[in-house]
Length: 323
Image (cartoon, rainbow, N blue to C red; front, side, top):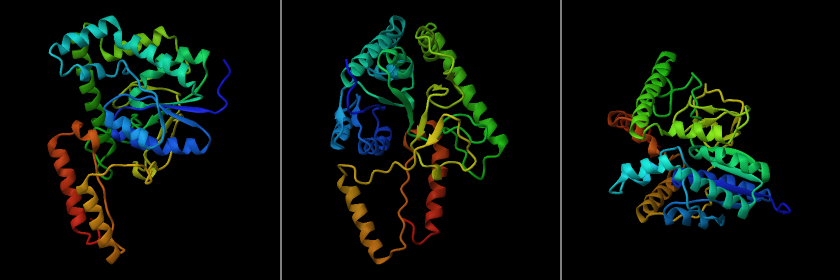
């Protein structure tokens, strides 16, 4: 089979607004460079519609990544949620289903570039044997800041902020994170009879015989990382900790704001923005500050988020031109 004359970029993103929206600017840039853009997505219809509104092709996925805990989330509402998840892990159903789905996707889309969400990093493990038969460049898309432990910045799940994060405080924050993860992993080993997420990932890595140039990395928050696999950070460097060093395979992709994207805004939001625009017409010095902690807030204690927003409100109150 001859390779496609038009290069194709396949994007595998987590089905969440905070992951999809930053990818749109990347996709538009690739499209401007001559790439055909295809999203391999699953999830609620409203999320899939968001992709369609941007004018990109969609190839629906019927599976979910293995070894990242999605099976637990999907089975939460089932009457036998624990048994469903245990059976899935014992039989390797998620692993097999995802492998078949990715193989189908590669056959139908025939990508020359594959962009994988950092939360879906285990997809690379399944894709690697397939790339021998159908070569494609693979890049990890990090829709947050870097999540690796560089020993100079705290984990993203920490309430530490620049100015009050001493080296000792940063070290303690990582120690607490690793300790919590250790107990969670130990519980999963017991709960799922030795089939924890980490054990599933390690077995798949060995089975697919990935070369030594890559290696699994757990010195980070959230999902497992893969050493030497290129990673584009979609948050701008200006919003990162100034002292953060990047790993050799990481790079900032620059600001990914796509102000021209198609969007269905709630009436209340439109009214708010219209009021701000009218006020700014009378006062050009006016500045609008938008703040969202996203799902990271679920990893913080209530007193930390309350303190953060309290400080923010206090800072804005002292600036007459801030809204």
